[in-house]
Image (cartoon, one colour):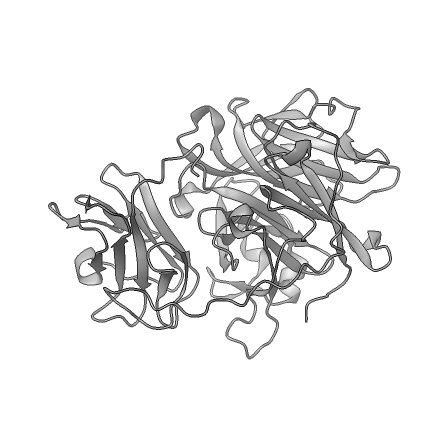
Length: 460
């Protein structure tokens, strides 16, 4: 389904990628998985640099079931260890893309051939069907209590609830569950009334507050929300487009001040990441955002891929006290950024493979150090858990590495979950703490669901 984006009608796809040690050089294989021939004349291939561009020659047609090879000698640039392959049609519309964070030991290819998700192939099969390995191990059973319940009123949000952030109580203030709706663009401040999480009645929060860009206009497609410093009024929202211009991708992080009076909140900052990220459709952009403190990253020798050495916060002036991690729906890749709050610029620090082909939400458990990555209904709502590899001799030392994939709880149907949040360790009860999902489709009239997961580090 491509609701709000270009129709997925073209059967030609990027099928296999060689970025290191190819013969005679790097190459990208296209495959026509359809039943009819496709004229690919004038289609454009790029890596992650928009100045690297190659047009397929006029008169190039791919019959059904055939392969077409893009060779480094023709496109004129190499593919890096952290790079992208992007394909556009003759009108410039995105057709397909894949992003990786390190060279594959063989190649990256779709499994099943021509239609499946990308993974490392069992062997190089240039111009032929991909050699698919057994793939990753199956997801482990859900580690929680597996007693999922709804925890909101009926039809409160009207659908489209997409992101969550849990803020524990401070002093006289109660716990708050922050939530964003992607359309109409709205931020909600939810409090527990003893039975359900409900919009706070005071200070104009009873129906949520409309979100606007820094200009005071527009309708940001708000997909996830996070905070840096707890108990601060600043919130950060990941957006993928302006709903008032729904056909154009706008991959932005917006900062809002929740104490701003009135029924609308105008962003104080916008960091538009379009120029730094692979091109994606307007409905396949930033779906997740979370913040990780510098203290945690430095203590675990987090590797700065841009600088080529362990992360040094002082190299990024005015970025605050941590990095923002965003998840891109189209690829499942997570990117770490230092956001300059004075000059308005940004710096990419790392690119992280989440283990999922799609990113629907990400959340950092600040107490335990787990980075959770949600794949959504297309992946049967499995969740990946990543942690920084602290084994000094490991080739992934200082980098986030997938530790486990968990299946969804059997007590929750495969619904359109797009946001998640986790309660802190201070709220552990009998060894468990809260875990929340936001259902974009408001299945059965409910958008919020709850279960409990083990406290502490429960993954070996």
